[in-house]
Length: 539
Image (cartoon, rainbow, N blue to C red):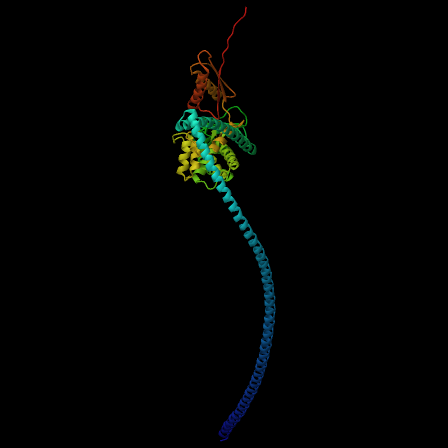
């Protein structure tokens, strides 16, 4: 029984403990709930206080903003009033200034009106004087007309009396008088025309010499003669063997690819490249220089270098043409014509570089055109392109003036003055354009300058022999001598076989024959000498 009571006691104790724990826990939970409610009330109270503070702050901010807006509005009103006041003052000043200007204008107008009034009075007085003068003039005119009628009557009477005394009719007398007057006037007019023609010729020659002298003095370009060979420096004479190659294959390949002759002689330190075509010679010189610097000299490498150099030369020629167009200042030029101008750098005429000659003619023509009032830019364009035909290939037929005109026309040159100057600067056609005359004159100046051109001895001697042969082929000519480097031809005519009139004709015929048969730069003066000598010996 005792254990059951103990168990029951323990159970009761546990039940009591659990009830007490529950009551204690509930009491604690209730306390926590009350604390949470208290905290919630505190937070709600704090939130209300914060809301009241925010509301008060917002009300204060609104009042402050309202006050600021009112102050800004008042400031704006004051500023507007100030601006309006200033504008009103400025308007008043401007109005006063305008009124003063109007008063000045009115005073000036009053002065002008007074002056016009005085002028009107003077005009009225002058009109009255003119009327009185006109009346006097009319009276004198009537008197003069009356006197003229009296004189005409007297002349008529005297003329009839003269007819009666001379026995000539009126028609015959008038015819004789008109013939005499015409004869006298013809001689007078001829003499006067001759004087004016001589004066005009003298003045024109003097002016032409002055213009030419001025142009020559203003432009003096240096001259260098072109050679037909170029030299290439080599580092040592051993390089000559490498250039020649085994059994000469390198030099043969090089000559075939470039079209030049390579001369490898005993001259130390150089190799000579010879060709009449300066473009080929320059390509060969540059190619050989590259090969020597590279050191690899064999047929394949030679062909590669020559092709590469040819392409570079084409670009170089184009750059030379563009530089010439820029220097001449002639405006835009077609790309093909520019390329042809560049090729003129490698063309020569009597050893004179054709591009340098064209630029010199260009500048001289521009100066002369400025002197006589023509367009200098157009004149320079005519001169720059006048020898463009010399750059054409040999496939085109005809002289360089004709070829040049065709090329210029083909590549867009439409100006008639330029085309006429190209085709007519050697007097191949009738010259009726002033620019052609200027180009021809400048071309002669550039070609005839000392040192500008030179000939080989063989060509020089041959030209002199041809001159003398042409002169000796005419009847009555005994001897002929070419002097002054072929610029003058002295012809000795037989006094027994020719007369003075025939000597004049022979001189003219020789000059025309030289023009038709020979090719020469500049002019050739022909002088025919006919001398009659009578010799007698006194014994």
